[in-house]
Image 1 (spheres, rainbow, N blue to C red):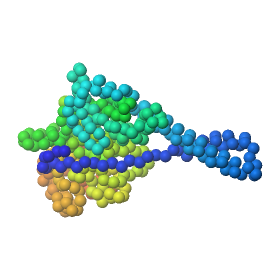
Image 2: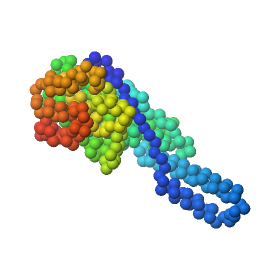
Image 3: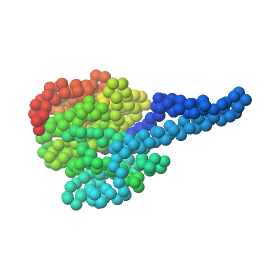
Image 4: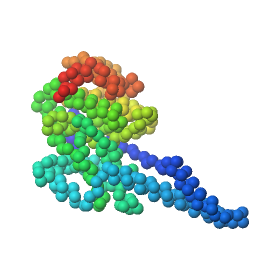
Length: 370
């Protein structure tokens, strides 16, 4: 947890649900069981036997569905995870050197192998399904494991390997970054060494990462904040921590519910609709504006986007004046941030529309070849 007075940190929460077996498979299995009993000679006098046959059929159906589902989930897990013996990770990547992060779902440690290569390795304990080769069900895997395996973008943390040790532990082996954005911005403002070009380059890369998530990976992060953005040794931005993320079908309308994220970054509709449904893509876009203001000013604009927050209430009354205070030098920047900080999510630009603003096109001209 960060102790800097001006930049607050609040732990996120997440809600998950489990799918059910498909009706198609259920009907197929029922028909196969039905065929077994059509050969049996059952008369009206054998009503009790017929009833017992039906009970038996239902039991067989249930067992087949359970077995099919378990095997399917286990096979999906095996596509993501390498199965290794207990102790393999330490033997391959070295003992943990230091703790670099922790949360409700696991720990992240720095490991250094015998060649001096550094890795950030996140560890989870996953309940095992003993009926299927002691391998974890796919749906038991955290969203971070299921989602992170498929990312391929320079501004999203690279996952090298995912390993399941047969004692029940799962490890995500990732590239290691020395700093997070929170630490970098705090140091820059403490030393009065903030450079607008550096801030704008980082913001440009953040937009690229979110555009990739929303329009190519079809994933919503839901916990964008300074702490979940790392800086590599070559000063490139890397978005991390997909523990609150969800994937979606771009062809079907969808929504999210519940409060997820850290208070200063959360969009107002999340607080207003904490028991209703909202579009989490809009909340991701809102969060990148808060990140920009925090980078440029060294502080959050408010503690939470609620009417009970004095600074947020002042923003609602004097939006342009507040934006000029936070971002005094560039009208094009204020234009974009003002549009993003529209309290009506239906009028807020999506990440694709963000790219049509002059501020972004200027950034693209400067940094697209970097």
